[in-house]
Image (cartoon, rainbow, N blue to C red; front, side, top):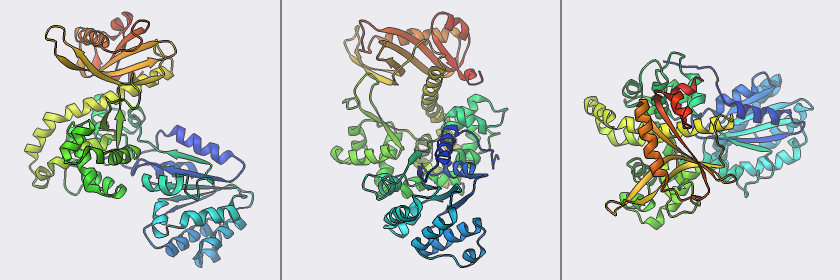
Length: 477
C-alpha cells in the first residue's frame, strides 16, 4: 500500500497562510474542514522551518490540556523550568506567551480546538479576554483548527462568538479535486482507474493512503473498504455520529438520497417524515458539505425545481455500497456483494465523472482554452412535450455554462465510456436536440456544444467542426 505519501497540492491554502504569516501584526486564523481532509498535514507543512508550537487537543479535562500545551510551548522556548512545571490556568499561559514572543514571529497551532470547547464551554470567552489583554499586541500567529465544522461555525466563526471580531482570516479546507489527487497516484496508474478510485475516496488524501493504488478500484473495495476491521468500513458511520445529533435521522436521509430520492417530498416519503420537518435536516447536511441543493442553472436559487444530492463522494459511496449491504459483508458473502458492485458501481462512477468534467471545463476556462466564457455553470433539467405522443417527458443536460453578459450558452454532455467518432457525433446531435428545451435568451443567444468522455476517437476532427471536446487524455496535456 501507499502510505506516508509526499505532501501534494494545497497551493491556495499555503499561500493564504503564508500571506497571513508575512503580515507584521498579530494574527488569529481559523481553519476548519471535514475529518481526514488534510488540515493537519497542511498546517505541519506550513509551520515547518518556522518557530512554532503545534498542539493537538485531546478529550482530557481542561487543566490537563493547559498543562500539556504550556509544556510544549516551554520546550519550544527552551525553558526547562516551565517545561518541568507547566501552568494550570489560561491567564498565566497567555502572560507567559506575551513575555516570551517579543518581536519574533511565533506560530501557535491548536488543532482540534472543539475538544477544548467541550472541556469548558467558556474557553472562547477566555481566549477573547486574554487575547485582548496579552497577545493582540504581539507578533503571534494563532491558528485554531477543528474537524467539527458545526462546532467551529457555531462557537468560533458565528457572529455571536466572542472570537468573531478577533479572527483575522479563515479557511475551510475542501477535498482535493481529481486533478490535485492525481499527484498521489503512482505514475503508471491508468487515468481511468484513477477516476474509479477517486469516486470511492472523493478527494480525501487520507483515504487514498488506506488503499493499494497499484490495484483496481473493485479490488480495493473488496480488500480495503468492504471488510470488517478496515478503517473505511466504519468511516461513514463515524463521520455522521461525530458531527451530528440525531444520527439515525441523518442516516435515513442520506440513505434515501443515495437510493435516488432527490426531491424533498420523495425523501420525506421514503423515511416516513413530514415534508415540513425535513428542511432543517437538509440545511444542516448542506452546511456541513455532505449534500448540495441544485436547481437548473438557468433558474433562480429558490426555484420550485430544487433537488438534492450527496455532494461528498465518499459519503455517497459508503451509503450506496457499504451501509445497505453490511449483512453481506458481515457474513463474508462476497460473491453476492460482488454482484452488487458489478451491477451498480459503474453508474456511481459516471455521476462522479460529471463533477470531474465540470472541474475540467472550469480549468480550461480559467486558462482561456475555451471559445466561450461563463458567469454560471451547472446542470440543467426540465421537461418537454413529445410532438408525436403529446406526453410530457423529462430531459437533462449534464453541464450548461452561461455568460449573462454576452448571451453565450454552452451545452456539454458527459459520458463515462469510450466513444468512436460516430458515437460522439450521435451524442452531440441528441444534445443539440435537447438544447431547444432550455429556455434562456433563445432569440439572441450564441450556442456552443461539447462532450467530455472517457476516451474519444477523432477528437481533433470534432474540434475542427466547432465542438468543444475533451477526454481523460486532456489531463496529461
